[in-house]
Image (cartoon, rainbow, N blue to C red; front, side, top):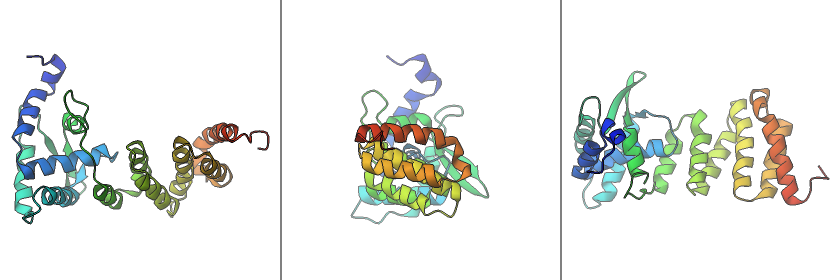
Length: 231
């Protein structure tokens, strides 16, 4: 049947079968949980965020009817039901005093186009906005960098700007390095130079581990600008 041992061990055939049976509310729940991870955020996803994003996805799929919370609750229960021992599309996790949800890694790969025959589903701009609002402060830059890799430049910039304004010196310092890296990868060497020079001059001691990398990157940027000798 073309299914390898590794796929059988993780329950891939059963997971694919259940995904194929998903109704709109169930698909919305799975997609919401997977997009949290695909965007670079650490699971579990807080329950309130999952329900909010799933209702948004369900509303987009059914624009003529208002998505009801009961439909999403039922869909979450369905997704958490095991397809075999200890294997399900979605796992319920403790998150402090609340409940969080973590998608099966195979499901994340499936929706990200990493499974044969699948193409990646796009993460909508509105989802990126919501995720930035929900993300813990220490994950803003991770979210932004993943957004940059996925071609969502505006979110990458906004995440960096938000971290730069942080009251946490370490986050603000990391933001300088991050903004230099993002600008460099875009080929905007002039802006990369500005950010790397600011990092070298201003970064707090908490980010000292990145100092050598910043100096090296700055030298490469100056070479690209033809200004190495002037440094």
